[in-house]
Length: 140
Image 1 (cartoon, one colour):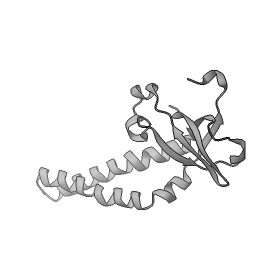
Image 2 (cartoon, rainbow, N blue to C red):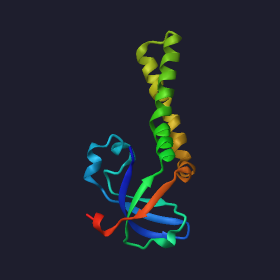
Image 3 (cartoon, rainbow, N blue to C red):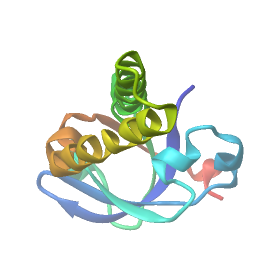
Image 4 (tube, rainbow, N blue to C red):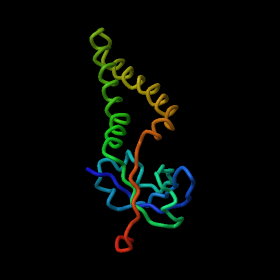
């Protein structure tokens, strides 16, 4: 599954471009739509090797590379699920009641997501994007 979005270039800077993701009806059936936030219109700064190749107002296609997609899924879903299950089964093995074990599983996610939020810029820097100009025939 490839996650790609149409966007409009808002700013061109020496280290990258800022694009506004165009909300798309194709995202309605996508399982990752809720996670990637594409259902809302949002601005995202994208680092590209040659920002001078883009112009403000130009329509582009923004696609995350496959390793970036996998990293995002693991950080957003995989690791939290593993942590949740480890805490629940660990507490259940210690004979803690099921309700308290479930609460412990949920509570362990709070520091995880706070840490993820704290390092969001470092994580975002490691995600790689492919930005291509859209041919005029693909414009909505």
